[in-house]
Image 1: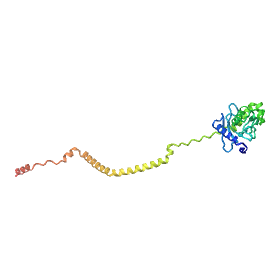
Image 2: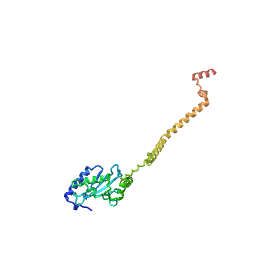
Image 3: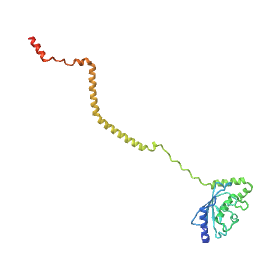
Image 4: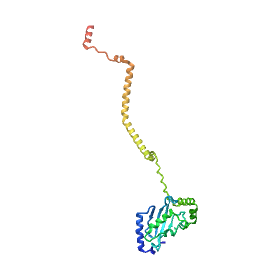
Length: 253
């Protein structure tokens, strides 16, 4: 439920300025999620500190500003489930003493967020809201570490984005099978048409050349059969001149 109506407007203006400043220059390992509809409900993401069972996790934290703010510190809640002695296992509420310790009105929201982050580094078994976690922290730290790490891996690990499957690469022949088939068909039709036109144009020439070739071939065969002498025999004998014939006739008479 919103507490905007219960908080002094001057305080809200100061909270708005601080939120913008923290968004522009956030503390290490803390990222604010700005909300314009309710300045009394602040949400932030806190990275699990190194060398702790919470390392590698991202924890969503909520700060609720009450009517007494900033005289009294805000109330803090973990929205991400975790195993911690100072965090209630059912509601995620953070122990009030953690934020009340060393609180001053001028500290503001940054101090509250850093106090929650420090709680992940140095849990306090004396002011416990989770009795099982406090007992394990005191007596069996290895079991406490393993249990806290298990819940961190389950609930606080950022969801990895599934990798998009690479597009199936078909061979260029497959991709352009339709276009290639059409182009091949067009080329074959054009080639057949050109072949027919060329045959039609070359038909008469080829027939004439064939007839001429057959005539030459027949003459050559005839020449081979008769031989060169036969060709000379066919030449007509030279006729005697007419004056000689007259002389022969006169002699006979």
